[in-house]
Length: 239
Image (cartoon, one colour):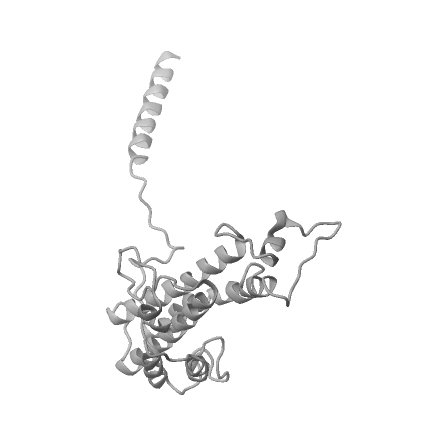
């Protein structure tokens, strides 16, 4: 019996030793995650790579704590009264109606963050295209960068409308804390002045969206959307 126990103990000791050694290397090769290291984008991936620049629009305009909520609850077009079964929500709507909100309130905080999320995504894709990470031909490069500058300008126009002299960031690689803009430095925020915005429009393709050949917009601004934005910009002597 003892020899059997000895052999069993020795076997368990060997297994434990191998198990201990194998547990020291916890590295793994995930096949379910797309990272910069395992993804080599091509021109065929362009529509998917542009998508993050547009994704925030859903929360900006359609979210409960989005643009409509912040714009209309603070004016006279929308009112959320308290009801017996709720809707007081800590007085959030009363503060909006009485113009007593602060930076911690969901509507301005969420709107501000979502707008900069879209701006950051646009800056990132512009950087990736200009640095060659996303390979595209010259004509596509000019058109796509113009499109991204247009959508970035739209986000900045909403920021300026709601928050005034916001920081203007157009360089994705910058690590400096952005300074608060002034009326002369913000240049209506396309990185940019109205003349630069019009240059962006002329660089946009007049084709239909690359996402869908049957749809003239398919969720992307393209020529007519950005043109309408630029035409609404009022140039000043400072620009």
